[in-house]
Amino acid sequence: MRSRIPVEPRARIFDMRTLRLEAPGFREIREWRQEVPHPNPRSDACRRLPYVELTDILATIGLVLLALGGGTFWAFSTGVMPGLGRADDATFVTAMTLINRAVINPMFLLPIFVPPFLLFWAGLLDLEDVRGWMLIASGVLFFFGAIVVTVGGNVPLNNTLDRSTSTPTVARTAFERRWNLLNGVRSA
Image 1 (cartoon, helix red, strand yellow):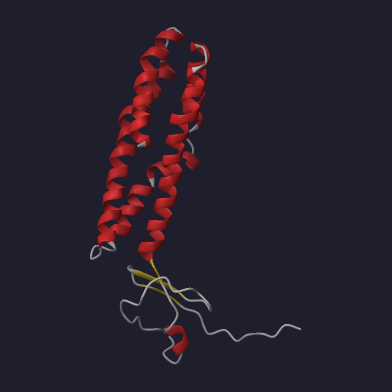
Image 2 (cartoon, helix red, strand yellow):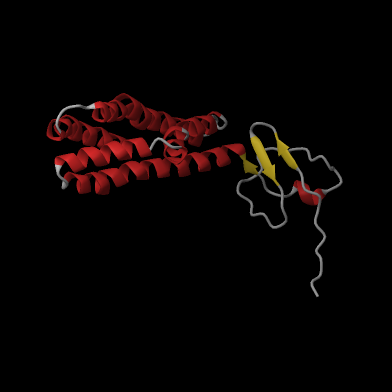
Protein backbone atom coordinates (compact mmCIF):
# COMPACT_ATOMS: atom_id res chain seq x y z
CA MET A 1 0.00 0.00 0.00
CA ARG A 2 1.30 3.41 -0.96
CA SER A 3 1.74 6.00 1.71
CA ARG A 4 0.60 9.49 0.94
CA ILE A 5 3.12 12.28 1.29
CA PRO A 6 1.66 15.54 2.57
CA VAL A 7 1.98 18.30 -0.01
CA GLU A 8 2.41 21.95 0.90
CA PRO A 9 -0.11 24.38 -0.61
CA ARG A 10 0.96 25.53 -4.04
CA ALA A 11 0.87 29.09 -5.28
CA ARG A 12 1.70 30.90 -8.45
CA ILE A 13 3.08 34.40 -8.17
CA PHE A 14 3.29 36.53 -11.28
CA ASP A 15 4.70 40.05 -11.22
CA MET A 16 5.53 40.52 -14.96
CA ARG A 17 9.15 39.70 -14.21
CA THR A 18 9.01 36.46 -12.26
CA LEU A 19 6.84 33.41 -12.63
CA ARG A 20 7.34 31.29 -9.54
CA LEU A 21 6.29 27.71 -10.06
CA GLU A 22 6.22 25.76 -6.85
CA ALA A 23 6.24 21.99 -6.67
CA PRO A 24 7.83 19.49 -4.31
CA GLY A 25 11.25 18.45 -5.59
CA PHE A 26 11.39 21.13 -8.27
CA ARG A 27 15.04 21.68 -9.14
CA GLU A 28 16.40 25.13 -8.49
CA ILE A 29 17.11 26.94 -11.70
CA ARG A 30 18.42 30.26 -10.39
CA GLU A 31 19.45 31.82 -7.14
CA TRP A 32 16.86 34.00 -5.46
CA ARG A 33 17.32 37.60 -6.55
CA GLN A 34 14.83 38.95 -4.07
CA GLU A 35 12.41 37.55 -1.54
CA VAL A 36 8.95 37.33 -3.05
CA PRO A 37 6.22 37.38 -0.40
CA HIS A 38 4.19 34.21 -0.33
CA PRO A 39 0.41 34.33 0.07
CA ASN A 40 0.71 31.84 2.95
CA PRO A 41 3.34 33.33 5.28
CA ARG A 42 3.11 30.34 7.63
CA SER A 43 4.55 28.03 5.00
CA ASP A 44 8.35 28.24 5.18
CA ALA A 45 8.66 25.31 2.78
CA CYS A 46 6.97 27.24 -0.01
CA ARG A 47 9.31 30.21 0.46
CA ARG A 48 12.32 28.02 -0.13
CA LEU A 49 11.04 26.48 -3.36
CA PRO A 50 12.73 27.63 -6.58
CA TYR A 51 11.11 29.67 -9.29
CA VAL A 52 11.31 30.05 -13.04
CA GLU A 53 11.51 33.55 -14.45
CA LEU A 54 9.17 34.64 -17.20
CA THR A 55 12.33 35.60 -19.11
CA ASP A 56 13.46 31.95 -19.08
CA ILE A 57 10.10 30.72 -20.36
CA LEU A 58 9.90 33.29 -23.17
CA ALA A 59 13.53 32.75 -24.17
CA THR A 60 13.14 28.97 -24.22
CA ILE A 61 9.98 29.04 -26.34
CA GLY A 62 11.49 31.68 -28.63
CA LEU A 63 14.73 29.75 -29.12
CA VAL A 64 12.93 26.46 -29.79
CA LEU A 65 10.71 28.14 -32.39
CA LEU A 66 13.73 29.92 -33.86
CA ALA A 67 15.50 26.56 -34.23
CA LEU A 68 12.45 25.12 -35.98
CA GLY A 69 12.27 28.07 -38.38
CA GLY A 70 16.00 28.03 -39.07
CA GLY A 71 15.85 24.27 -39.56
CA THR A 72 13.13 24.71 -42.15
CA PHE A 73 15.28 27.19 -44.11
CA TRP A 74 18.30 24.90 -43.75
CA ALA A 75 16.32 21.87 -44.97
CA PHE A 76 15.30 23.80 -48.07
CA SER A 77 18.90 24.90 -48.71
CA THR A 78 20.44 21.47 -48.23
CA GLY A 79 17.78 19.04 -49.41
CA VAL A 80 14.68 20.39 -51.09
CA MET A 81 16.23 22.86 -53.52
CA PRO A 82 19.15 20.62 -54.58
CA GLY A 83 16.63 17.85 -55.19
CA LEU A 84 14.33 20.10 -57.19
CA GLY A 85 17.37 21.45 -59.04
CA ARG A 86 17.73 18.03 -60.67
CA ALA A 87 14.14 18.08 -61.97
CA ASP A 88 13.06 19.36 -65.37
CA ASP A 89 11.70 22.93 -65.62
CA ALA A 90 7.98 22.08 -65.65
CA THR A 91 8.34 19.80 -62.60
CA PHE A 92 10.38 22.43 -60.76
CA VAL A 93 7.84 25.20 -61.37
CA THR A 94 4.89 22.97 -60.45
CA ALA A 95 6.59 21.67 -57.30
CA MET A 96 7.67 25.12 -56.08
CA THR A 97 4.22 26.56 -56.75
CA LEU A 98 2.58 23.78 -54.75
CA ILE A 99 5.13 24.07 -51.92
CA ASN A 100 4.67 27.84 -51.75
CA ARG A 101 0.92 27.41 -51.40
CA ALA A 102 1.23 24.61 -48.83
CA VAL A 103 3.57 26.48 -46.47
CA ILE A 104 0.99 29.16 -45.76
CA ASN A 105 -0.21 27.48 -42.57
CA PRO A 106 0.27 28.03 -38.83
CA MET A 107 2.79 25.20 -38.44
CA PHE A 108 5.14 26.97 -40.88
CA LEU A 109 4.37 30.59 -40.02
CA LEU A 110 4.57 30.26 -36.21
CA PRO A 111 8.28 29.34 -36.02
CA ILE A 112 9.11 31.97 -38.65
CA PHE A 113 7.27 35.02 -37.33
CA VAL A 114 6.92 34.56 -33.53
CA PRO A 115 10.52 34.00 -32.25
CA PRO A 116 11.86 37.55 -32.72
CA PHE A 117 9.05 39.01 -30.66
CA LEU A 118 9.40 36.43 -27.86
CA LEU A 119 13.17 36.95 -27.72
CA PHE A 120 12.81 40.74 -27.73
CA TRP A 121 10.22 40.57 -24.93
CA ALA A 122 12.40 38.20 -22.89
CA GLY A 123 15.35 40.53 -23.36
CA LEU A 124 13.36 43.56 -22.22
CA LEU A 125 12.52 41.74 -18.99
CA ASP A 126 16.21 41.10 -18.28
CA LEU A 127 17.98 44.31 -19.32
CA GLU A 128 20.27 44.45 -16.27
CA ASP A 129 21.96 41.26 -17.43
CA VAL A 130 24.08 40.70 -20.56
CA ARG A 131 21.75 37.84 -21.43
CA GLY A 132 18.89 40.31 -21.89
CA TRP A 133 20.84 42.29 -24.45
CA MET A 134 21.86 39.08 -26.22
CA LEU A 135 18.21 38.01 -26.44
CA ILE A 136 17.25 41.40 -27.88
CA ALA A 137 20.12 41.22 -30.40
CA SER A 138 19.18 37.69 -31.49
CA GLY A 139 15.51 38.70 -31.88
CA VAL A 140 16.43 41.75 -33.97
CA LEU A 141 18.92 39.73 -36.05
CA PHE A 142 16.36 37.00 -36.76
CA PHE A 143 13.73 39.64 -37.57
CA PHE A 144 15.88 41.30 -40.22
CA GLY A 145 17.69 38.15 -41.38
CA ALA A 146 14.61 35.97 -41.73
CA ILE A 147 11.35 37.91 -41.68
CA VAL A 148 12.43 40.95 -43.71
CA VAL A 149 14.22 38.74 -46.24
CA THR A 150 11.21 36.39 -46.46
CA VAL A 151 8.58 39.11 -46.81
CA GLY A 152 10.72 41.39 -48.96
CA GLY A 153 12.37 38.80 -51.18
CA ASN A 154 11.13 35.22 -51.12
CA VAL A 155 7.39 35.93 -50.96
CA PRO A 156 7.39 38.31 -53.96
CA LEU A 157 9.38 35.73 -55.95
CA ASN A 158 6.89 33.03 -54.92
CA ASN A 159 3.98 35.22 -56.01
CA THR A 160 5.67 36.02 -59.33
CA LEU A 161 6.26 32.31 -59.97
CA ASP A 162 2.65 31.51 -59.06
CA ARG A 163 1.26 34.12 -61.49
CA SER A 164 3.79 33.45 -64.24
CA THR A 165 2.32 32.85 -67.69
CA SER A 166 5.68 32.32 -69.39
CA THR A 167 7.24 28.99 -70.22
CA PRO A 168 8.56 26.90 -67.34
CA THR A 169 12.16 27.49 -68.47
CA VAL A 170 11.80 31.29 -68.35
CA ALA A 171 9.90 31.18 -65.04
CA ARG A 172 12.51 28.92 -63.46
CA THR A 173 15.41 31.04 -64.70
CA ALA A 174 13.84 34.20 -63.23
CA PHE A 175 13.08 32.47 -59.92
CA GLU A 176 15.56 29.79 -58.91
CA ARG A 177 18.87 31.59 -58.50
CA ARG A 178 17.50 34.64 -56.61
CA TRP A 179 15.27 32.48 -54.39
CA ASN A 180 18.19 30.19 -53.45
CA LEU A 181 20.37 33.21 -52.66
CA LEU A 182 17.71 34.74 -50.39
CA ASN A 183 17.05 31.38 -48.73
CA GLY A 184 20.78 31.07 -48.06
CA VAL A 185 20.67 34.44 -46.28
CA ARG A 186 17.71 33.24 -44.19
CA SER A 187 19.50 29.99 -43.37
CA ALA A 188 22.63 31.75 -42.14
